[in-house]
Structures are given as C-alpha cells and as structure tokens.
Image (cartoon, rainbow, N blue to C red; front, side, top):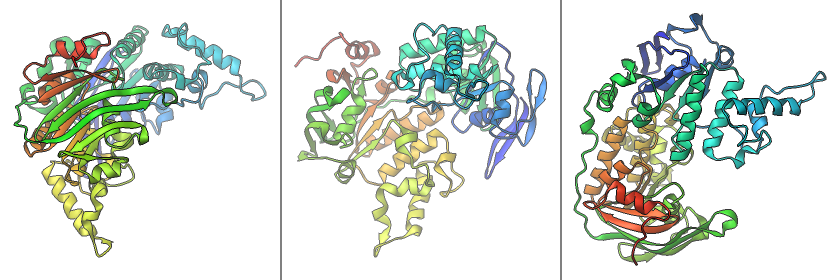
Length: 504
C-alpha cells in the first residue's frame, strides 16, 4: 500500500500512509483508536476506496470495487465481532455463501464435510473439531479458529486480524498464536491489530505505528521497545500513563452482604456465593479474578440486571434497598458501565447527543415536552468536559473510536448523578492514550466523592487504580488486599482454583 489517503466528512482519516507486508510475515499494526488502522484495513479489504494511493498485491495494482473483489485477490478480514452463526455446524459456517453443489444443483454435504476436514487438518484441528460440530458448542477461542479456517477456504494469502484476543482466555490466546504462526509458516501474510503490546512483542516480526492518520514509524520488532512504540503512538512517554495516587475514602456508600446468584445450566449453579463487601465515598475497589470467577455476575446482580436470581442484602448510604431492575438501580444512585460496549453500552442507532442524554432525559423535559435545545446544550458541555473527539454532537456514535465511545458512556452515567459506579472492563479494546484518559477520569470521580468498583482483567491496571483489591474465585471471595499489600503474585494465588482461601 503506497501513499494511501482517505477523508470522511470533517475527518482526514489517512494521510499518505504506506504499508508493506511480506509473505509469511506477522506484521503488527498499532495506534490509538482513531489513528486510521481500521480505515487502512478496510481499504485493503475493499470496503472503502482510497482518495489517493495504490494497493498492490504481489506487485499487481488493485482497485477493489467491493469486498468480494478483495477476497478474490486473496485478502481476508477477521473482525473483532465474529461473523459466524452459532446454530449452524462448523462445515456449514465454513462454506456459507459458497456452498458446494452437485451436477443438479443439490447441496453436496459430503463434499463440504470432506473439504472442511481438510481445512481443519491444515491447522492440526481435525482431531479436536468435527465438521458436524455445532458452532455454538465451541468455545470463543475455537470459533476464532473456525473464522480463520473460513478465510483459508477463500485461499487467503493476506489475513487481517483485528483485536483477535480481546475476549479470549490465556490458554486460548496461546492456542491462537500457535495457529497464526502455523499460517505464517505456510506463507500467509498476517496483519495483526492489537492494543496489547505484550502480544505484539511475543508474536510479530514487524510493527507499523499510525498516529492521527499518518505513518509514525515502522521497523523490525527487535529494534523496538514498549516505551518507543507508545511514544510513536501518542507522542508522549510511557510513564505518563500510570500515575496511581492514593485516595482518602470517606463514609460508607455501599455495603453488600451475603450476595448469591443462581445461574448456569438450568439455573442450578451458583455463579456467586456468599460475597460481602463495602465501598466508601471516594474509594476505588478493584474486583480481580480469572474468567468465569463471577465478577461481572456480581455487579449485574447488585444492579438488578439478573432478574430475580440475585439474593443478598444491599445497603446504600446505610439504608437497606431492594433493587429488582436497572431502572430501580439508577433511580437509587447506582451506575453500571458494562463490559460489552458495542452490544450493551452504546445505542448504535442514535447520535452522540442522545447517547449522552438517554439515561437522564427527564432533566430536559419542560411542560411535558422534551426540549432539544437543553439536551443539545448538555451534550456540548459533556463534549467539552470529557474531551470528546467528535465533529459535532450530531455525529453517529458508531463513527467514533472505542475510546470516545467509552468516555461517552461514562459521561452519560455522570449525568444521572450516581453515588456509586460499577466499571466492568472499562479499558477493554481501547488504546493506551484513551486508557490514560479513562484512568484520570476514574481518579477524578473518586476525588469527587464517588464510590467506584472496577473489574479489570489487566492486573497491573487494577493494582494501580484500586485502593483495595477483592479477589473472586469460582464465585467466592477468596482474598482482600489493601493497596500497599496487593501484589500480582498474591492476587493470582487467590484467584486460582486451589489457591489460598480467605479466612472467615
């Protein structure tokens, strides 16, 4: 890709960017959200057409009129949100839209299964996954592998992977890396987009950094270091991102006693069992644990988002409360920033203004009529206060980067004037620059007297943000650490099944 430029209304997304990929190379593409990574890859994938510049594949200039032309040239994009159908079999998913038929046009299931088995064997998966397996019965990591196989079925020689590990466990990540390395050994060029710099150093040979739509740097990974990449991404030193400062907690604002939550198969399994904790005004409490430990379920249960399956006592500012729905939780001063930003956090059909105000629309009603001028004024104030990078409040929310979307969700909840806010994976899938802003916002909110509970799978992040760390394992509280005594080793020991148990 040479001299690629692309502009959208009010935004120069790419400005003369060049990018090169060799056969068999795993090449990292990094940058802040909004740096132009997705736009560059959408041009490669035929989704967008460049305003300037040339795309060449094996030296041949290409001007794709759409994704199918890019696929025919050997380009396959694997997006963060997988495009598979869980109710169909592995084989049906692999050949959806390009089914194999016999002479009379009848679907040849046998031929599809045979070819699916050959594709599975290409990545040494044929002994673990059957073509007849229902996709929904596979783990998320296995589904990711099926998405890769689907690309291989298109004879892909260039594979673009966008944040492929954002929802995978450590074991699944290692397995995915083995698959990607095997692809590279077979001559496939892999473009790997990730905000997780440790993954890039572990997996990639080459790295290209974009900043504000321009090429900030490119080179072999062995010539780079973490601080240098971050500096290229945002123009600041790595040390600026993590400045943990202790808070001075005040009165107790939330207390939970004996929290239990039924769930799992048939609703018979305990997802959370007998968990008690408290949060004080101006305090950040971290919830640590492995995937499936019950952290999200605990917060959603307290918030009334798990129906009637939550049991336990909840006290707000010392008074017992009953919360049976998110609406009740909001009315009583609780807020929840969900881990599923795309699915549950934003309202994709609305613009920035309505995404900011939708939880507090009653504030803008006068005489039974919604005053849009008041709503827009509040949105403009939030845009300025939260440093939102948007062309206007009327911009569609889906046009924004993940970091800006997350700040909008936080700003929306602050308009409801909560006493306690739950933040579930608040920095998942956003770049280091946006993370720094979120960290500062969390610190600011604590200093303004909010009680804050943070769930994060990034342990260094949690240890830096939290005044206290609570550890869950298989739905139970196994340890609690003050800021000074918390360490990665202690937290992980308490988070692992069979590790240390909290004394009662």
